[in-house]
Amino acid sequence: MILNLMVKYADADLDAVFAAAKEHGKRLELNANPQRLDLNDVYCAAARQHGIPIVINTDAHSPDGLDVLRYGILQARRAGLTRQDVANTRTWAQLKKLIGRT
Image 1 (tube, one colour):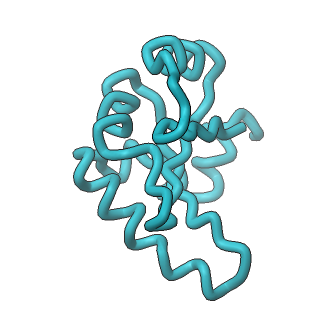
Image 2: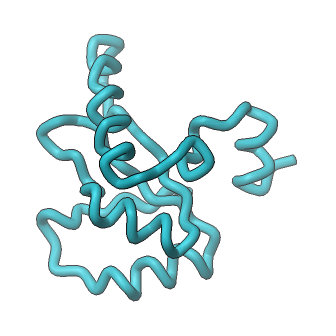
């Protein structure tokens, strides 16, 4: 399960969110839509420091919406994330293992 945070719009205790995500084996979503781009680069970097994988999501509602993926990649790069920090850069076999489906 992916935890989607609307940190731009919510007053959240992010330390508690990161701790809960880590405890429960959750990944956090970076919404690549340029109107959202949440988690921002600072929070993505903090998630990385907590060992929480990020999932880059286009939030596309049609094939035309997939072109915003590059904004999510740029946001992740600003955060210092590498391929190893982003869950959906893995192969399907690796991703199944990460989410506990073998």
